[in-house]
Image (cartoon, rainbow, N blue to C red; front, side, top):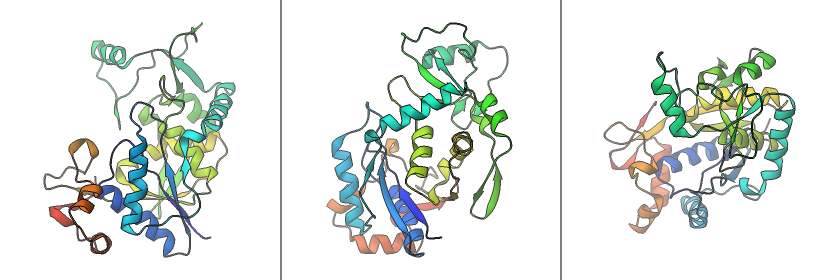
Length: 284
């Protein structure tokens, strides 16, 4: 089987060294096996996406010498497909509308007599809107997956991650949002649909997204989609041990390019595991 991998950045900021390492991992995995490397732009967050960041993604990848196969896929052009999938899940009785604001959820959790259940993304949603008798869909709302009901319907699930079989435990996230009030689809929904639709056979991405695979595996089962093989690679971390992130001011590829960095030398160093500037690979 010829592998198909992808690099799927969000154009909400400039790419940094961590993105370069992740793109290189996915690119090289495919190229070493005569496979295909795809580029997908995850641009469905209307409040944060900027056209100049899309241009920056293209410029950065070409500067690194990483060419992709076929045309770029834009999630913003696939909204009808996401809407159709949400309709299927609603018709199956697996979604419910949620009217809670983040502040209301935080207040309810704080007022609870029991300790909040912590999930990978923080306190788990307490299920306030689950089972509302007559929800007013004229009010702004998100759509949440009833994970307990969905997991019961799907049954036990596993996936292969770097040759290890992992048991899926989507309940650790609680009732995840599949469509936000201000966005037509969540990351979980869009990435699951797109990986299947693009024929991605191997998902090569950072370990920060390992936990999300629990939800993606559940959605694959509910939607009768194929399950790719996964490889969650180490992350780049700074001298303080924290992984590189846009919000923490990680050095951008654009800045390195402007400073005269040799892209061939940078790529060779990343491939050799020799991280520049005092950075290192960290498991988490």
